Structures are given as structure tokens and as C-alpha cells.
Length: 112
Length: 113
Image 1 (cartoon, each protein chain N blue to C red):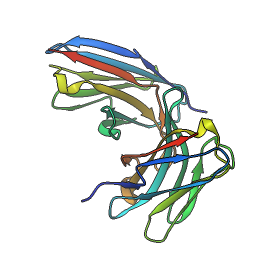
Image 2 (spheres, chains in turn yellow, green; image 1 turned 180 degrees about the vertical axis):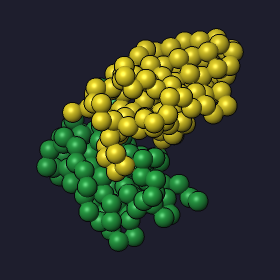
Image 3 (cartoon, helix red, strand yellow; image 1 turned 45 degrees about the horizontal axis):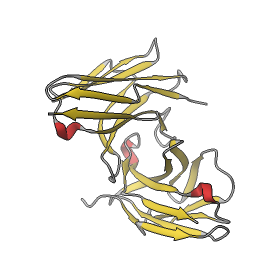
């Protein structure tokens, strides 16, 4: 079955720096790759996603890139702010209605 | 639109008991998925329902079951609770026409003693 590896498990940056989180997946049939942000005690929130027919997608300070050949995708956060501090999860799925397979999460800490 | 809601938010049960958790999806969403979140295993897929039918199931024992009603509300049931079932149980809903995106509820924190 699908396996998603996520690195690093923790990431500490200074306010204003960039942060990059990387994920690799094993199943070449996966075609949808969302990223979720989960603040302490709160629900996971979908922050950005990408489908396999797209190489990059941006939304303000957040961007996601996908390399289908290498089977990896990354989340880039620019100009980080303290409110970006949270656990970030990557995930992969093969089709609508199928399971999201999650990475183990990255705890991002942004210090001011 | 109101978000996904889950009840109860917190639950304490003892080993051997059974529990039922409820999830109300975003209005108009017809797909509901359930996930278990633990510190050790992360987020793991339990099952997904669409139009009252289970379409997909994860690798959990038969003690974990679910159902979906005609109004898309869903319940999951865990029988013969074990200590290892202590977790945050999250449901997520998806619109029928763009079912890739899943929107999570706040979860039910289950503690088994």
C-alpha cells in the first residue's frame, strides 16, 4: 500500500525566514497531494493541495511543488510568522473518495 | 456554511465497553471519512462512506465499524474497547463533485481506562 515519508519531524526558524517540508510517496498511482496545518488542540485544516497534472501551486506565502518522477512533493512557506507555528501534515491519495495517507507530521516553530 | 461537527467532544470509557461517535458533515457534502489520530501512529484512515455505502476501509479490526444515514450524517462504533483505542477520532467530509478535498471536524477525544 501507499507509504508517505515526511521530513523533517521538527523545524525551528526565525520569523521572516523560509521553511521547507518535504514528503515522498511510494505509490505512483497517487495523484492528489494535500497539506494540512494542525494547531495545538485544533482540527487539521487544509491549507493547500496539488494534483498530479500540476508541478507547482502558490497561495500567498505558501507554495507546493510536485515532482512525479521522483515521487516527492514539498511545502514552502516564505516570510514565516509566529502564527505559522503548528504541526504540518502532508498526505497522498489515489482517487476521489479514497483514503488520505498521511505523513507523520512536522512540528514547525517560528520564533520572533 | 457551518463546518463539520462531531459529538461528543470528549469521552471516557473503560475497557470492554463500546462507544458510538457521531459526525455531521458540511451541508451538501455526501462523503464522510473517519481517521484515528495518535501520537505514535499519526493519522490513520478508518473508513469512508458515500451515499450510505462504505466505499473504502482501512486496516483496522472488525471492532471498528461505521454507518452513514440518508442525511449524510455518520456514526462510528468501537466495540470491546482496548486501552490502545485511546485516540482523537476525526471525521472529514467531502463534496460529491470535488471529493478529493477533505475538511475535518474538531474530533472526539476518546480515553479508555
